[in-house]
Image (cartoon, rainbow, N blue to C red):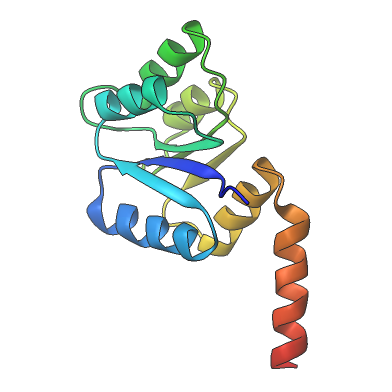
Length: 137
């Protein structure tokens, strides 16, 4: 069975590694990039089931990346994350119609629940959680 492919565009190395590792362990095929330009190139050249993108990336911000790929017909769903809790950034990010908007730091379990739901793995995650709970009693 094919793993769902997730692109994670994040310039903070610690966040990129921890979220990427967590999603890999959770069964996703995760690719990571550091800049808006790299995110744009990745979305143009590969098919992803989901893109998690930091709003403030070097080179191009999430708005520029999302607007560009949508004009080109790439319909990858997006989750926007940011360390900037300002109302202006939130308004701009939500204007992109993301599936969800997270302000860092965020709970990895909450992110996984949204990712699972976005790619249709919600019932699998709930089943895994029920099995784990049964084992750990």
